[in-house]
Image 1 (cartoon, rainbow, N blue to C red):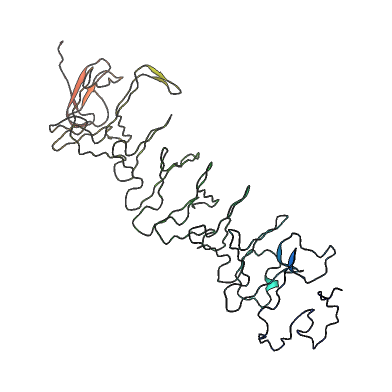
Image 2: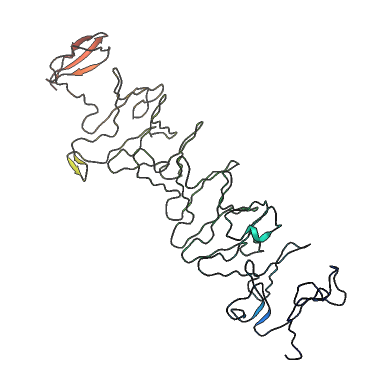
Length: 403
């Protein structure tokens, strides 16, 4: 043995420093020795300090060069315990490197951060990868001035994965005390944020605002602000619910506030149990509260829709007995399409302003209740007028002369 090397061969003597330790200073009183500033201060070409709790079958060397401390153990390689400080282990790197790095192989976890209620026997708490812990502290804490507090990257897995078993907590929680978002998601080739759930009546993505702002806002430079998709019959791509106000609201300064489009179905449907199914309102003169337009042509075959023999701008239908297909009312204006006056309806057309569809019977109606003011055209093209209420009412033939 060289004179500058020291080897402890044992057996341990009870009077030599710390009992059962190969190398130690004489500090059995647990008081810091006044003559030493460092307990151990050594340098090595490959490893500064190498320690293990059991003998390994392979060579007792660190796996890489340039190691400050190498610890090998059956349970833990290195344990650091803090007293007055906040950390059990402190890693420092002042050359744009990493303070603490955890690397593993074969699918293991690089770094574990866990908060436990008791650390009387710490090795018994995390002999295996903990699925949860019983403490109230923070498992992993990351902080930075202008950089990321915590960053996770992966080539084929999740960059950061969070999990919670509590019904009132989030798997991942983001908080911003400034004016920025609590959570931001970005992608160069996929969705910025994706939310998935398999639970009925729950949302894939849920937004909540405690103030007066919107719960969820979507914005796009060249696409739709919010886009919803479903292939289930009876469900909507986008659904809005409000028990005391408007369910869905659309607003535009220059274009359509709400637009509905369908290939073979109805473009827009409105329904109500106790009120109007669809209501339109405008403040502009010369415009209608409700406007219907059909840009098709008679006898035109539309792809996938068959032959169109007639086109209608507005159609009204009532299925109940005594129901009215279209009703126009006005106090100081026109009830059904038109301009000015106090008419219930104003009609005009390029071919004729009004057409009454002939019946398939000859003569006036002979059954059903009818009211004064009704007009009726029979199969022969004769015009009849109901002059008295009744079943079938009192009818008079309108005398027509050749034009």
